[in-house]
Structure formats: C-alpha cells, structure tokens
Length: 157
Image (cartoon, rainbow, N blue to C red; front, side, top):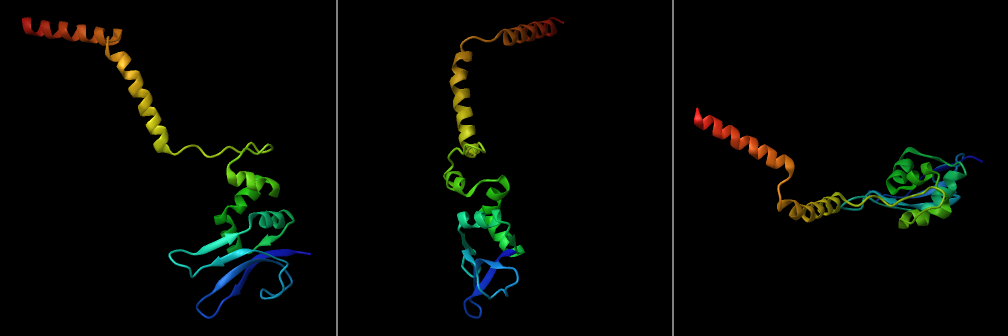
C-alpha cells in the first residue's frame, strides 16, 4: 500500500486550517486518513502556526511514505526532514531535541553564539597583556634603537 503525507483542509470559508495526515495514495484528499501527524494554520497572525509530531512523522517516513510539496515544506521547517536525512531513529529523536549525545551518530550540540566566543577571546587578551607591558620585547627594543639612530643621523646632516 502506497501512503502519502498530505494536507487535509478544515475550517470555514476564509478561515482555512489544515491537518497533516497520512493517507493511502488512492484515497481522495478529503477521505479517510491512516494517521494525523499535526496541523498547519496559515491564517494565524503574526505568522503561520504549525505543529508536527516528530516521532510519528519519522516513523511514517521510514516506512516509505511520500510527501506532497506543501507537506514537505512544513516538515522541513519543523526539522523533521533534517533528522530523517541524518538517519536518526525515532527513539533517538527526543535525545537530539534535548541536545544530548546520541551514541550512534555522535550528535554534538551547536557551538556557542559568536558573542560568547568574542567575549572569551577579549578576556584572554586582557589577561595576557599586563604581563607583556612591563618589559618591551627584543623586537620592539631593536626597532626603537634603529629609529633613534636614524633620527640622530638626520639631525647631524
């Protein structure tokens, strides 16, 4: 049996909402569904609202369910397709969502924001600079000696 993940319309005229459902591909779009994966409410303001059950979605995708274009976009925005393409099993999804380490895939949480990295780098440079302020390095002293000799030579001529 070929299954398809698609949207099933509900609501009155001008107030549409959609359920993301799994149906047999031979059934009409408003027909009987096998499972409800979530909903999509495009009329919500300030932006559309969607909610998808990741466990069920990954389960149906792993069974070979095809997606309509709109359902694919919604699943992609909710992060389901990312986990599906990584090969994450439905049992591992909750660990991935929480940011824990997954044994088989070696999932690591995302790196810290750039602001924290920049702040840490400035703290390191501030802690290192007081040590070097006391005595000039060999390069700095050699350059300053050359400058003073060159300045003295131009004044004599």
